[in-house]
Each structure stands twice: as C-alpha cells, then as structure tokens.
Length: 321
Image (cartoon, rainbow, N blue to C red; front, side, top):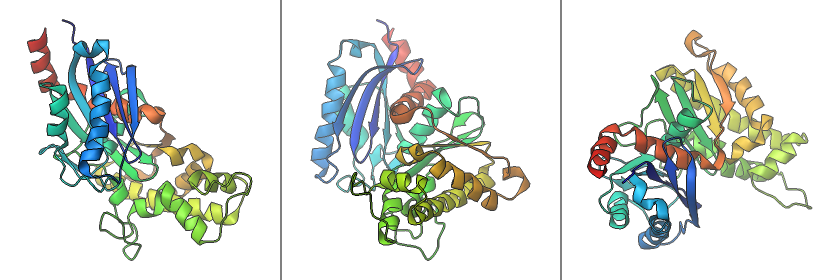
C-alpha cells in the first residue's frame, strides 16, 4: 500500500480546516467548519471530529501516514493538550487523545499555529531559502514561529516564537493572556479597529466596515486616525521583532494574516519603525516580506511539521509498506 500523504488540521478561533497533503505540499482535498468557539469543550471537539471524519471518508485516506495539527495556543506538545486564548472551553484540553479517537493508530504531531505557519512558509513560501526567519500571522491575534539554522524550532511545548505575547508596553492594557501591553493587544486586527473607533474613527456609511480592513482602507485614503492606528500597530510589531531578532539573529521576517493584506498601509510604517528599534549592527538588515501561502499557510505548515517528524514518519512508514 502506498503511504504518501499526511492529514493536516488547522485550528483557529473562527474556523477548523483540514486537508490531505502530499510530500510536495499540495493540498489534495480540504474540509472546513466554523469553530464554535463559545461552546463548551465537547462542542468544539465535535466540530473538529466532523472535519477529521470527512477526511477519513475520502478515498485517499488509506494513503495517510500521519496527522499534523497546528492549533491556536498555547499548546503543550509534550502532553498533547491545548489552551487556546480564543477558545475558552479548551483549557488543558486533551486534543491529541481526542484526535486519536478518530484517526486510530496514526502518529499525531501537535504544534502551535505560529510554528505551523513558520514551517509552511519555510517549506513552500516566503522563507523557503532562509535559514533564520520569524514567520508571523497578524490577524484577530498575533502569533509566530521560528526557523533557526534552517529548521523549525517549536520548543519543548510547541510555542516558541509566540511574538504576540511579548510585552512592549509595561503599563499597557491587560491582555487576555494575563500580561500587559502585549504586541497582540496593540497590533492585532481586532485591536487596530478598537483603537481607531475609540479615537473617533467611523467607517464610511456605504460599506459600514468597522474592522481592521475598513481602517486600512481609510488609512490608504489618508484618514489621520486610521493612519495613527496602523502606525501604533507597526511600532508594537517592530518592537517585538527587534527584541526577537536581538535574541536569535534573524535574516527575514515574514508577515501574513488578514492585516497583512493591508499592504503598504502596514508594511510601510512597519519597516520604518523597525529601523528605529533594530539598531544593533547584527539586526539592522532584517528584511520584512509578506507571506505567500495565504489561508493555506496553517494547513501546509501542519503538514510540514508532520513530515519533518522523521522518526515517527519512518517508523510508521516502514510498518505500513
């Protein structure tokens, strides 16, 4: 029997996506369900099981060698548990055990969603030829993962690179994570919109879009409050990036997620602000580039993390062939 696919799952606060992915990173079949994030733990697990079941019913399932999961975090890859900030019902939830109830004896690899995106962009995206990169997602939250010395470095629990919860304002607003002044609390799409609305910005009557996308359009037209909201976000991101680069020496920062679709409204002030924060000689030349994988980054990355787990893959593959 040929075993040349992995099943990838991307779990976020708004959607749960799954796909069958080949060794070239091609998504052969995909499934998606809304995340019932406000339901109790069992309700969220039912949605995930629905995605997994739909994958197992595909004709190509018999070719699947392992399962990779990228989940909103924090996660604990050692214990197979997750506690996503944006899924309140899951606290120390035994995700891997729950998944095994559907996929049987297949090996399961769990990483945080930021690490998954980093793995995906390094495998098939904007960080493909980079040995040292931070890959970020700026959306309803801010996450990240690290590629160091050419390899994904998720850390012992799968959370390394979680830049969204670096504090850049010691006296800042309380973050849902429990910290203060976190990058996410300032720079996420949700908080860009929150800041702009509190400062008096209002969406155009014809579109009524009060999200970060609406703020971005207003900033592109020169609305001063909208511009300020993105400048503030850019400074928080730049401070977090500079701190990370100072610790681990980065060549490249890849930025994806919905807010990155704002283009130069975000990237222009981000590059300028980074010049003010990344001042030491070994961090001055960091390049900042947009992600390439779009909405598929989490799935491609979950597959990449799974394929890279060589010991598990080879052991199972040898048994299955």
